[in-house]
Image: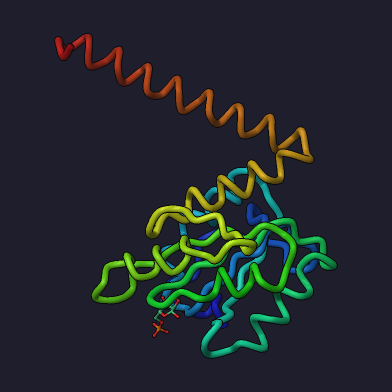
Length: 185
Ligand code: RP5
């Protein structure tokens, strides 16, 4: 299982918001070799206390399993799918072709093409089947976008995101003030 791998996300049972029964967000990946890239997404979903689950579904190696996830997602109450894949990254697009809920693709740097192959595969979906694509290996932004999507229908997530943005802003202002103190203009 994923949890048994050495790259499993680190979250203590008392604080984890992983929820295998009623997740709002499901992260899936083409291979367990993608797991390390998803650490940022796990951290954000934990921070915003989003019920989430994660699994492995490969468009190429497990097409039926992938299809089952996509087809059941809406009825399971899942609001957003995050799909990470490297190489010829068909996974996010294939999921999007079988579910009406939003799919966010995370291109993974996994081959000699350094993730450019995955980025172009994911972002260049044909008209009518959108995948929201974040930067290469940037699962943090995938999770943040998922929280923003949840925030369109949930004031709690919306407020939490606004607070997060405010905090980021203050942090930059503090850094800028420090730089001014040491004479850096
Ligand atoms: C893709 O192929 C996976 O998403 C992964 O990024 C890449 C390599 O997979 P492994 O050969 O490491 O299983 O399908």
